[in-house]
Length: 335
Ligand code: SAM
Ligand code: SF4
Image 1 (cartoon, protein in one colour):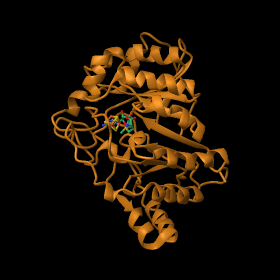
Image 2: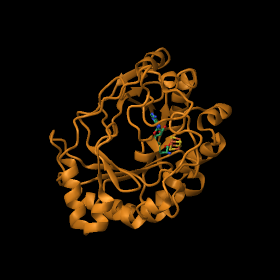
Image 3: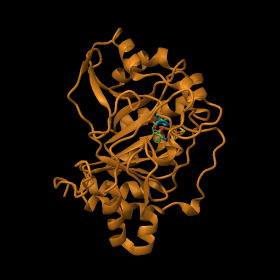
Image 4: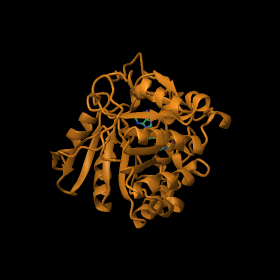
């Protein structure tokens, strides 16, 4: 029933109809702003099975969820993930779900794009922070630009709509962002530029050094492109402009300089079944224990109880003394 309003309404009257599901905390990249190079991942025994993840998604759908985004870690490296994608994609085809989307680093797209499109995925977000091979390796530590570009090509051929996600990194890709906007326009991709968020300890890397305000990025881009504020509103937190020269949309996600919380319609579920009501807060609810202990009725009760304490918003700050506000890494709750 995609047109019926969500039954999940938080204390601030916001209807929750969008879930982001991190299907794994593992990844085949080690992006410098996201992870330390040496990572300890969750033991596989702690993960919800794909069947359990599906039960959780379906419970949310019964309560009014219309959009599901699969993320991670790298969602496409989880074993048999296509099984879950096909089952949820069938609900897009049946009209029960408006949209099933995926945020991916693109490393597996070359081989999986066709299957994703057949399964019912129409749009994907692909994270790419540079178009220079050496820099790409520097940022992702383990990734290959050629592979991701081949993945983008395959995704386009399969008919998937693509949005690029690019994190603005001071002194790293800041000079290149204009070229990336042009590249996106040339290929027919939308694009979102994201500020670094202070999540998780990333080892020797320093977020104070990485942080580049999107307001600065925008004013620099305005020297090269005509940007007009757009009325477009997506299910996500980006504010959009139209780029006159390319005819594409460009989004800015500014968690540090703009509070996007007033219209928040989403919650996040981790691969171990923790429900996070806000990306920027620690409070969570244990859906795994509810599901395993009391079945779907207990799961529903746990979801209602958790939505009842969704906070008004986050208060991220990057300062010289404090570059981590939330201990959880980005790969745990997904982007
Ligand atoms: N692995 C997939 C990918 O990279 O697209 C999905 C998960 S990743 C955590 C989702 C998004 O979060 C990516 O676009 C990534 O660039 C972004 N991201 C990761 N850590 C971040 C941070 N500390 N601040 C801002 N964005 C971050
Ligand atoms: Fe992996 Fe995505 Fe994090 Fe990069 S941003 S390390 S691709 S989860």
